[in-house]
Length: 323
Image (tube, rainbow, N blue to C red; front, side):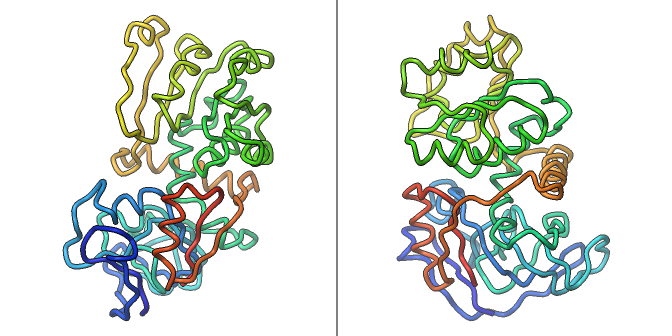
């Protein structure tokens, strides 16, 4: 099969190549998927660059997310059959065969049935962003009904699905965005109000529709913490899923006084039951049509380095590689 891979970490153009390698067979508890679309996330370029991980043992086919058709089923797999469409998440986690290839092999739990009506582009956009969003929102839609949620960076992939999942659960959703085109994307996802987080009147604008917020899905904790704390209700939760160049100084007394919970989210380390709950919520919301795709930027497999570079440059929308 043709696959993108790297044998050492470094710049995309230097270490990524597209080669013919043996098509892997699924082992017990695994499925092989013929990949239709591979979704690219920031974690993919960070791992390949060496920013967050050491070099691979041998080689690594990158990318966690994707869509495709189950091509072969290993022993002991229940609930998935050959010919079934699926969306994938965390495909490359502790696994050599990510989705940037014609085929990938993954543990069966990481392949989720994809409705017939859902596009490959939508399915490949879910994975890490949607599951992260669901976990940041508490993993259970029943806890959000009647609450107010603040989503920082509403035009990003996690922000997009956080808006849609929170609306699906019955919450009022406020989002932040840094430009009008990004604000339009957040509104299209269903945000009740979109504000520029740099605007001095942002707090007053948000309070015009809700006196406080119960949960924050945060992409830039250091930059936004003052805004978050100005709006948090007693007992609110701030879920931060992205790191910054420098660690913010924590105003411990203010957090303590408001009984505010600061929660850090890195999907790799989420406990299995919580991860399963976030996947289940994403799957249910997808099934009832509550989730939609962002604008898509498509790259052929031979241009995988350019695709990863686009994500590193903060491309607005979803970057997909088509093998």
